[in-house]
Length: 237
Ligand SMILES: Nc1ncnc2c1ncn2[C@@H]1O[C@H](COP(=O)(O)OP(=O)(O)OP(=O)(O)O)[C@@H](O)[C@H]1O
Ligand SMILES: [Mg+2]
Image (tube, protein in one colour):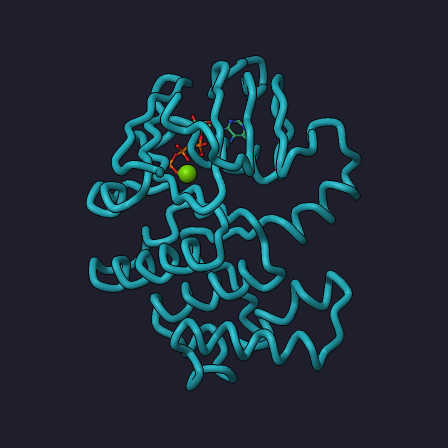
């Protein structure tokens, strides 16, 4: 870990164990996971289907309470926070992107990006202006008023990225965000996310089955049998 000295921690997962109780069965999905995520880095999370990638992202995103272990974000221990405090922290610090875009079908692209900002108390005018800026950065200036059904898969996923960035989070958790896209759109969506992570100095954990994309990230985390191993693909310094 010496090469990481001086890096600024954003997220620390410490001794995370997670057990699902399924009827009378106990399924231990994560077994004593330790992970530090630094500012400005994008990490791929890979591993066979059913190994717990989504579970780990849900725990990191404070959507799921781990059975054991602690989560700290920007130096704050989040493990014992009330549900209300977690919701506020999630809304302000964490952006999620999923395999299916999960946009609201009855709202336009710009309205979808406005929604999380309105929830956090921003005015309509301010949130609309910011949404237009974000969608323009993502190459969707001409799609502002389109509803999700009228967007291509790649465009819808770019709207989902804009929505994830709407409240200027410090962490993006992306759960197979390119899983439904063809190779060209997948690379395009990845490139955009990569550039944003670097230019905004935020962090991203990107779960994927796509090894070509995993190779382009700063680090590769391999999840298998409840444990992780790491490969350093590029120097972080
Ligand atoms: N709510 C739940 N209750 C019980 N078991 C669950 C629950 N959610 C997930 N699991 C189990 O935990 C394991 C890990 O699931 P998870 O969705 O985290 O895997 P994954 O690595 O994301 O898989 P994929 O690559 O297919 O998305 C699976 O065996 C799954 O059946
Ligand atoms: Mg998954």
